[in-house]
Image (cartoon, rainbow, N blue to C red; front, side):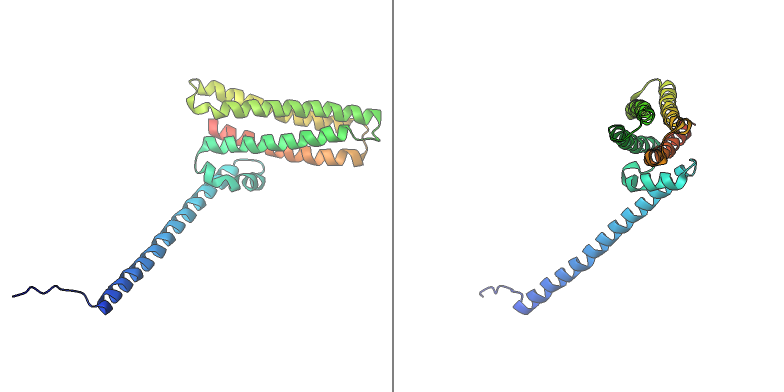
Length: 208
C-alpha cells in the first residue's frame, strides 16, 4: 500500500500563522509596558533621592532645579550627586566670569567703576579655579587612599570660592558704582553664590 503524506490544509496553516502573530503582538506591548514602567519607577526613585539630598541645602528648590535633570546619571550615588553639583557650579561660575569680563570692557565706565569690576573679575577667576580643583579631586575620590584629607581639601576650595564671591559683592557695596552697572553683575553673582552654597552643603552631607 502506498503511504499517504499528511499535509495541513491551507486554511489551517493560515489560521496557525495568524494565531502566532496575535500572540507575539500581545506579548511585545506587555514587555514594552513593563520596561517603561520600570524606567519610570527608577527615575522617580532617583529624583526623590535628589530632592531629599537637596533638602539639606539653604536653597533646596534651586538645588533640585539644577540637579533633577541629571537624575538618570546621578541615580542614588552621593558622590555623583556632588560631582554633578560642582559641574553645574563651575558652569555658572564660568558664565559669571564671562559676564564680568564683558562688563569690564564696556565703554562709558567711570575709573572707579572699572577698577571695582576688574577686582571682581579677579575674584571670580579665583572662584573658577578653586571650583575646578574641587571637581578634579572629587572625580578621583573613590580611588583615593586618603579620602578624609581629600574631602577636607574639597570643602576648603568650595568655601574659598564662596569667599571670593562675597568679596566681589562687598566691592560693589562699598564703592560708588551706579545701579545700572552694578545690578546685572550683582544678580549673576547672587545666583552663583546660592549654587556654591548648595554645593558645599551637599559636600558636607557626603563627608558626614
